[in-house]
Length: 220
Image 1 (cartoon, rainbow, N blue to C red):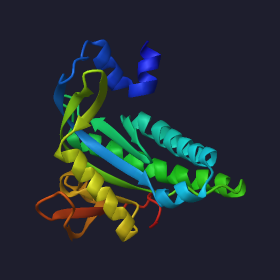
Image 2: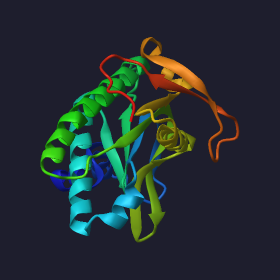
Image 3: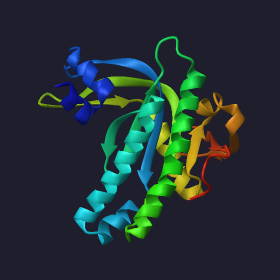
Image 4: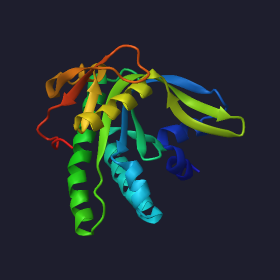
């Protein structure tokens, strides 16, 4: 049962279900780093690639991201089409800065591994994998939502929306990873501001930051 739940809804979510958090509306408020990423040009790929080729590409992308973030405390919460929603929970009395730095290390590791993955895909004649990452930190409601006969264990809240909108900017700006001011405040040594941006569904323009660590691959 543990293995099945881990596979379908993730380890943390699976443990919550086993602990009895199974009713619609059951949940808790948590602080977490939110990682939101999605593939570049997925609509075009969906139109041009054979379905089995597209699924294989998605599986390669999802697998290497999932395996990369685990050692850094990240948990894949949802696959949303070609997007991935990952959380790095801030445990009680944990150092928020340490959690943010762990997320940064996961970003660097994933983008470096992407280079190797794409080298192999190129040799095989496969389409290269390209994606952006939006990072934010905030408070989330973590629990069960849905219909009486179909529930999903997920996170909701403004913080998730902000991470998603920030990730959308990576496409426009050609920068692989962007973060909010809240996240950047915890990792001041490796970020720089790139400006204020109006984002859909967010009332005030947001200050957005770029990672500038030497271990991070260049622009996309």
